[in-house]
Structures are given as structure tokens and as C-alpha cells.
Length: 94
View (cartoon, rainbow, N blue to C red):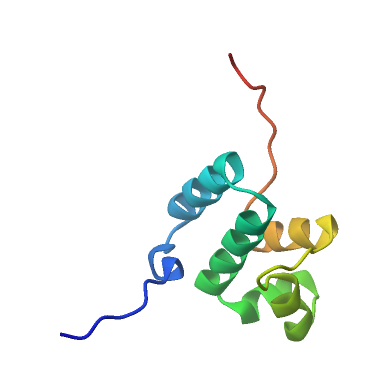
């Protein structure tokens, strides 16, 4: 029996799944987990498309979304827009 490494990017195959995944990570995750999630989404959509839409170079994009990276907020916004997302704030209910 052969096992393969689980890749979340393999399951992020539509906008609804991507939105649900990212929303969950934003609610429950820390900074590193959020950056990693955005990297998974970028991988699922295709780094070439993200590079084209953000204007970032491929090495800059990989560096910004690598483990332990601390990307600028403007970079995160560019990538979110490129993957078809937006930042939306909802009030926290008690």
C-alpha cells in the first residue's frame, strides 16, 4: 500500500470551497496559518495566474507565501484579489 501526502490545494477546486476554507482559517488560525492558507489557494489556482494578476515576480510570490514569511498586507490583498476574494468585516456577535 502506497500513501501520498495530503495536499489541501487538490480540494480547492471552486470558489465556494476556496471561500469557505479561507474564512475558516481567518476565523480560527494564526498569522502563519493564514499565510499558508493563501499559499494553498494560490497553488490550487495556479501560481502563473497569480503572478500575472498581481504583478509580483514568481520568486517574490513564493517567498511571500513560504513558511514563516511575514508578507506585507498589500501583498496579501493583491493575492486575495487575484484569487477572486475580498476582505469583508462582520461584527462579532456575542
